[in-house]
Length: 219
Image (tube, rainbow, N blue to C red; front, side, top):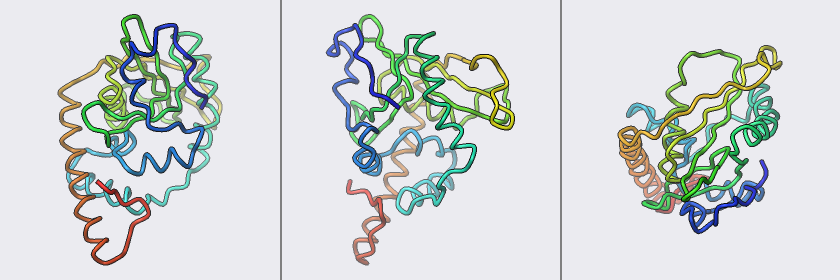
């Protein structure tokens, strides 16, 4: 997606804008930066000790998932939905990777970023789905809470577009605001730290064997 359009609010008023690590417009640099930290995509998987270990394995070796027609559809629709979000909610498309103020390996790339008066931050997260849902899936919530933590945001506009056979079923995307939840964020930080501990242990073992994973963390 395109770069963030400058906000009428002075950038210095939004602290997160001082914590940009990379931009997906330079995909190689963006992927390299993501590989060296814990992203919202990683955290979305962290629910149980088993899932933490599995996410660590994926981080080191890759998940092997290269996409499918549904993810291709989502990538094609995301810029269209992002433009609708910008027009209706004044949240701008974002392609930038940020690090948290508290920990430089805690990373997130939100789909949308809005800077309000006083530097208050609002985010957007965009999804497409062929499976209608009444409540937001927990993995999406974990992803949004992590983004809120990394960027210091108070809420996120969750935007989803249901489709059937890749044809949208509504005239406009559906939306719901998700408020920041510091208790959930604290739990995710604990889980992320557990994932980092596993990564450090496995990376140290790999170094001893001179068997480096493609995305081994040097933490």
